[in-house]
Image 1 (cartoon, rainbow, N blue to C red):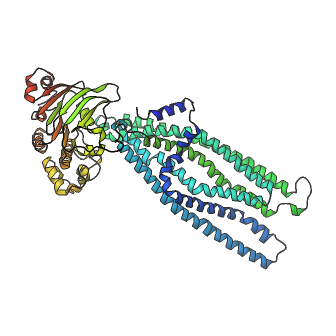
Image 2: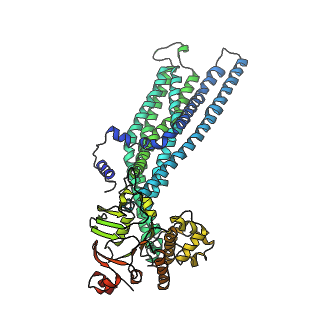
Length: 617
């Protein structure tokens, strides 16, 4: 039932039901979600924003400078020519100081500060996301594919947040101060024309807020589609080998085009609606410009009645108002575009926040935690468990494994053998019952510490896209090359490792694409042996090996796990024959329990498995 709250919330939105309070909306905003990462850098961000405010003041002076050139230098008939050049020199010096120091230098300093803080915040968000996702249980990972999760870290959601964040800190303060300072500066010249500029600003701001509400659902829809399609495409790319094996190239290409066009349709809907909102904003600007031209003409002609020319606006002021109106379109458009960016950032942050707020179904204990015993009996008591199919896989299972005993789990597919191993590792937690090691409930132990006590050889081991040394060190990060070589020799893996170019420095392909199934399985065995754990879980540990290699590796494994607990899941008689005990599973329960000789002599499940070749020779 993961993410059910978030899903119900989205369903209500789709049905037009609005139940969010103002507080809830505020808590779902991009700023509320980012605040934990911004908090420690808030003073640096404030400094960058204030510096950008000075940038806005500099833009205002640059915009209005032509008025002083026209009225005070060129057209003032009272001053002499020498005074004109003096005024021009002062104006030029002031312009250069404001432009180079007040605009370029200040902006560069603020950009350096912001860029540093931005990368720190993005790093913190990515690190938190990655740690949290790795901490979540297998329930979560069966619902979210790797391609989808990758987009959260490096794709559109975080990109949308980053773009909006940068515009707000680096561009918005300058735009706001440019608007405010320009209107106030011009307000001392003519109240009517300044009023038109203020009306333009207020009208565009109102349009911006309305556009934001209309655009956000389109971004949410796009983000959801992108996540679905990305997961599909990533799955197809991972399965490229099988696409070729089954001659699926044409079908795969057609499916790819169909999926990708879904994104194209969403982008079309989103961008066309955004463009329509922009057109409305442009129309407002056009109407306000016409109003400005009419007001300028009215004021220049002296109003409704003839008035002395001294009360009329000057040519320089006319130039200033027209230049200001055009120049302010940049800040106004930037603020309007923030509506689109805010909608996209909120939608992207909502996706990230949903993952970050997902609660693990295998949480680590709060408060004092129990230590995982190094040596102890394993007890499974009245355990009931099922995946999301609704059908229980284990039904009130009871099983006791004394420390040092080698126990084989056998049975048909779906009997619950691998599920027991996953519960022991706390990849899942039982719905009912408990699992104990030396009397300690594993729910009370730190999950990562518990898994470090187990040496696991999965049926399909994953090989990371790095060199051979790091692939083997996953279970023991500080192992020396000599220790790695010894583990490989025990696992019968050194014979192919030493032939690789660079030996331990050899880089394997994605998912171990350059290795055979048997080679990957030997590396998994070497990993388990290198860890020197207290407990072993061998899930079809030799299924990909040939008969000769299997006999050799089995002998080594029996020697390596001697004196330690080993849980062995297998479909081969050779693997289970020498175990201390065999547990035959059926329908999530223990059907038979005994030695190989005892169970083979009885009429029952184990004998049926052998005779039916479910257990192969």
